Each structure stands twice: as C-alpha cells, then as structure tokens.
Image (cartoon, rainbow, N blue to C red; front, side, top):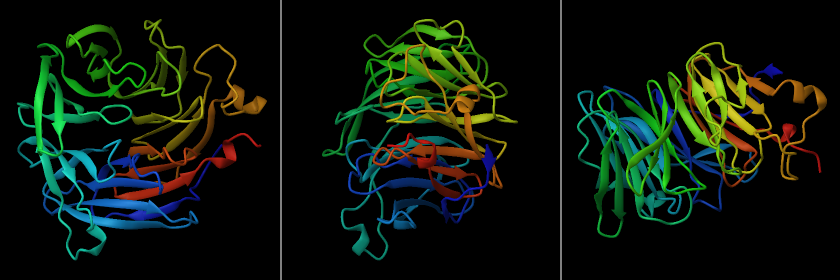
Length: 350
C-alpha cells in the first residue's frame, strides 16, 4: 500500500539530514533537528507537536556555527544534545545545552558544554548511553572508537578509552546495544563490527558490504536491523550472524536510514534516496508475537510492507520515532522538510 502523506509539515530554511526524538521531554512529543548549509549560519530547531496533534510548533530556534551532519538528543536531559559538524575543511563534535529560559530570550544562544576533541579524521556519529542517566558517550570517526566520560556540571569531557578499527577498515556509524551496555555495533565498508567496551576489542562481525545504518530492536535481545545500499533492509539474530533471518526489499535506490519502534514489536521504518519512507511489520523471531505486538491481517503477513509514504521531493535521510507517543514518527528530507506522521491506522484495534 502506498500513497501521499497526511502528516504535519514544517519547513527548515536550509538543507538538512538529521533529526532526533527528544526522549527526555516526557510532557511533549518533541523533536530536534539541524541544518546543513555550507555558506550560511546553520540552525537548530526544537519542534513540538501541539496538544491536539494538528500543528508542529517551533519552540526554539538557535544558531549553530557549522554544517550539522549528526545530531542526537540526550536521553536524560531535554536541553542537552550533541552534534557532529563540518567547517568545510574538517570535522568536529560537541555537546550543547539549550538555555533554561530560551522562550523568554530575544536571541537565545546555545552553550557548548564540551568539545569532543582528539579525532584526527572525519567524525561520523555520537552515541548516548542507551537508557537512563549515565555520563558515558561514544564517538566514532573513520578509524577509531572513543569512549568518553561527560561531566555537564564542570563542562568537560574526558576520553576513558580509545581503540582503532585497523588499517583496512573505515568506520561510518554505529548503535549502542540497549540490552547490553558493554556492546556496540559499528558499521564499516565491508562489515558490521561488534565491540566490547570493557576491553575495547572487536568480538565478532557480520560480513556485509555498504551498510549505511544499524539499529537494535529495543524490545528483543540479539536482534539487529541493517540498512544497505542496494539490498534494502536485513534483520539479524546475532546468535546466528552468518545469514539474516529476514530481508525487506522495498526501496528502489539506496537505503540510508532504519529504525525499530520503541514499543511495538516488529514495526520498522526505513528511508533512502528514492524519496520514500517505508513502514514495515515483520516477526523478528519464530516465536509467537507477544500481546504488545502489531496484529496484521493475513494479507499483511504475506507482505511485510504496510505502507509507503512516497510524496517527498528529495532523499530522506532522517527518521525518528517518538518515545512518548510511539505511534508517531518524524521524517526529514534533504530539502529541509520535516513531516510528522501517525501510524495508528496500522496498530491493533482495542
């Protein structure tokens, strides 16, 4: 099933590619996004869905000095977030804080809490501790994985440990295992590598080429989803890593983003350079679905693709489920268009 969007739109001033759910905001459904302009001053937009769910409101607009290539909201403080940025000549990473009374200020300025210095090459992403309050951060550049300790009160970050991926590997991103906080998956050009943070050593790998994005299933242990250039989405049981347990081919071009729903088993979003967002339902194990799972009709069981949102005009690089209202997601296309959608029509009737 495919068609246009019935969601709520919001336009950024410049091009953009990253958006994040503000998980720590338990009172509102909120997202934060940043722009990617080489010549202009970039912007960070704090967006909130109105109480009636009919309008996307810009609660805060802040200047950011450089192009934003990665952005993640702190899971325990709604005013803190991280960015990976480019000056056009080099990459950097930092943790920022939104001023407390930003709504009452004429020109609120972001406060840089800490710079994650020490990267020699291109920085790709920052990963926050997967749940709850913790001072640990991970940053990944092309060659190294860094584990940081962040002290917000002292406005400082220190490297706890660092390890190289090796001469023949170029890292591109990663995900922190929500079921095992000592485990991280890192993507590179020919594989997905799994690291133990206690030893900072690689423990295993999945040999796959051109994996753009990985995400752990937050509800089931050992389950990983990968987005790949030409072969779409693969679902893996990490206890049997040689062959994926399922394959979802729904994009006509490269698949750039994939994310598992935080609440509903088997509900997955993907997007890519075909200007499409796909909503999937798949059983990630052979076990019977739990009572919290999405109930699909017989026809949907045959076709895991529930819906394709295909009225975007540019590549869709950013996807984020709302943790507060897990039937809502936000998408971001490269032309700076944010769309918030509800997938309630695909959830089980009560």
